Image (tube, rainbow, N blue to C red):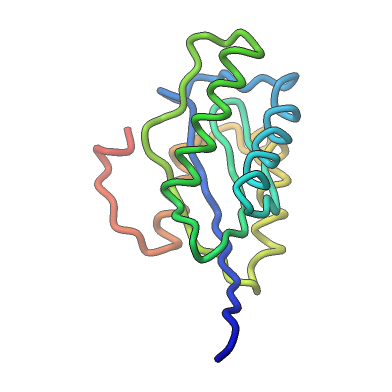
Length: 151
C-alpha cells in the first residue's frame, strides 16, 4: 500500500487540581480557543473543546505519530502558563492524570454534541459530579479502575 490513511479520534478529559472551580465563565471561551490553537500548533485537529468550572473535554483528531500522553502534557503545560502568566491565576494547576477514549467516526457527531453541551449538561444535572461523569465513561469504555484512585 503506497499511502497510510488513519482516523484517530480521541475524547480526552481532565480536571483542575483537586477539582477546584478555577474555570469561571468569563475565562472558559478564551481558554477553549487557546487550547484548540495549541492542538493545531501540534498538527492535530481540535474537533470540540469545552468543559465546566473544574474540568475540560477535548475531542481531538491526531496523527499516527502523536502520542496521547505527549499531547496532553503539552496542552496542560501551555494552558497552565497561559492561565498563570496572562490571567494571573498563579495557583492554578491541572490534575496529574487524564482520561482518554478512542472515538469511532460513527460516534464523532454524538461525542462532539456531548462536549459542546457541557454547560447545559452540568446546569441540568446539578447532582452529577465530574467524578460521576468519569465513572460513566470508564464503565462505558470497559476500563477497569480502582475507586480509591478516583477520589
